[in-house]
Image 1 (cartoon, rainbow, N blue to C red):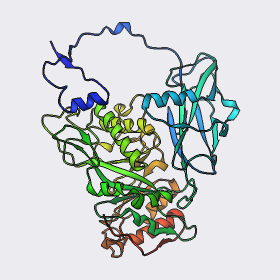
Image 2 (image 1 turned 60 degrees about the vertical axis):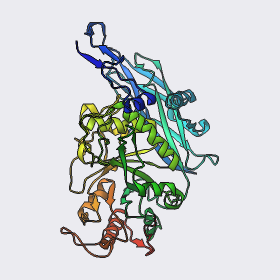
Image 3 (image 1 turned 90 degrees about the vertical axis):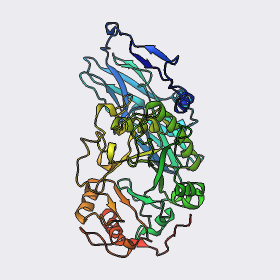
Image 4 (image 1 turned 135 degrees about the horizontal axis):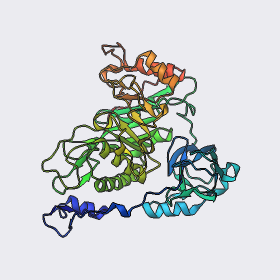
Length: 486
């Protein structure tokens, strides 16, 4: 009779599994696979409701707001199918929703002050007959002087059906809005609709502080919005069987001296993102089993909390398959496996940013298997970086639900001279895409010496075009670069 191993879940179990204690032949965890009589199951015919923001995110969304400012989020009531009757729902602020979330995830988020949250129409939502989407309710909120910059607060909301046949599950009737408070420096805030500019740097060669050297001439705003530390490594420790990161010595030195290398950037509004890719072991972002992905997410949450990071950048390169396959891993990589890791990271850290680099198994996330517990790719991926050789590709078929503002079209590679043409930058501006730059460094020869076969120019030329076309301003370089001193 065919037998299957029953794998336990939870952090302790996965660590035990990775040490090899669970995967022994003829163990007590084996069980007989028996036929299941599916005739005993019933498919629900009810009209089930759920809440979603205008970007389609369910369960939770996250945003940032500077102290002294107000903002709003529009929520929609949606249903799995239309009904012949009208349903009415009331949405209300409810701290019990946050209490349950904190208990389930081990977090200790604080509620956004209820007196500073206002729901339009008193939170009333109506789902007309023969429809599946309601008009939106606007959740408006304002920061207070007591709220701490750098801290994330949560607006907990609970929906209740007051009329009609619509039904909620316990999970779908609530929604959490994670609001991170930013100090009101305003140094790189170029407007709500401005293109977001990402700089992915080689930390083996480049000091992150070089991003302080570039401002826009008239507004005095800093040029860059996000700095990606490329790249830390996810590794399988062959001696212990555990999976961990913080394997790159330069990354470790930067993080251990975050007040010197990272805080000046964050104080000016720049977000610090930690890159993750393999390092010639079986461990990669695209082959962790669910229990291993959950354990690694908990590990990375500790890293994120310790060093004050703002998110993660996922790159599927440089792994080395091991035979036989180690416990806790899939033998082969797939988009579905990387989807599970990104989902687990986002579930545990909803206020942190997930960035996918279109390479390897991150090239296409459109399969049904990339929908995790009802969450599609748009729910756990915040931005997508186009590969340098990909030009004008369509995102909708490969990353469903990701809009232009979250799509990094026409990425530039400053080390080898993969520059973006003027018409590419103009399209980014017109279509409100995001934009990624790799290997910016004032100490590279390409900073002043023209290179590149397609467009013969320098890093400074390229940055000048970014400023002028994307933001309508000249870029000022202060001429005081920071050498690598770690």
